Length: 275
Image (cartoon, rainbow, N blue to C red; front, top):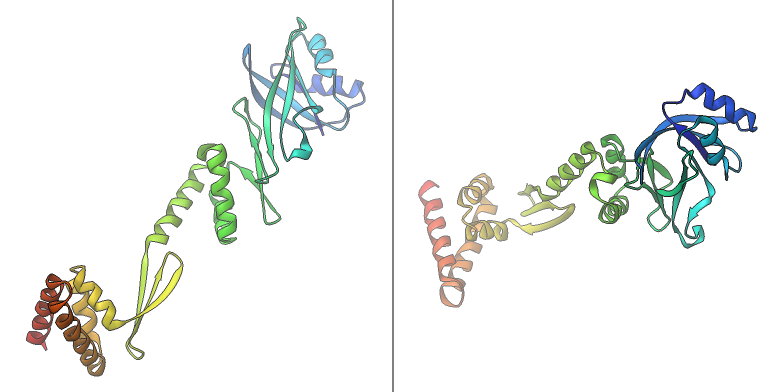
């Protein structure tokens, strides 16, 4: 698919009529801005089915303004190498011209990214058979997150390569930050029947004995939390926990962490007072 256009102050109807004269069917009219050596220029452009080489010069002379062309003749690099750039040629009425890169095609990351030289062209990223516009919207980011770890890692690689604000909308950035916060959350479920605590952290599930967990809470000075768990435990489980803590205290008194042993002793004394 080729591209032809002229400066945006020209009426689009006149541009279409001129393109029709050359046998072109103009499709997908839109406005883009290109950073050139003569400053940023706004163009009305159309998708063209056919070979466009040389027509920017013709259009520039016809309308006495800058015109552009794009197509296969303006591919920079080898498409077979999986990393190449798509450019446009700008031609001015005085005959001067400039080739400007506008899109990066990255076959390694399956992404098409607009360069810094263009405003108004949408990039795309391809993940799991789906195509998403760049910058990625908040709604599309939700879909990508639902696709799982591989999809998220792909977005992270693209962001690292091409920059966060080029690849992600502000809403998508918020979604990622929200996801990272959720990863930090620790969810716990106490199963007094089995004597274990189920812990969900960073998407991973682990189980540890309640007695071991309470000991770790005491060591970290999370006394209120440890007290709450033991107070809600059935008598049999409570006895097992107290027995374990007594053993832990005695071991640490002699060959371990004496401060930790003192914390356990203080905790057990407190439990005894309120039982």
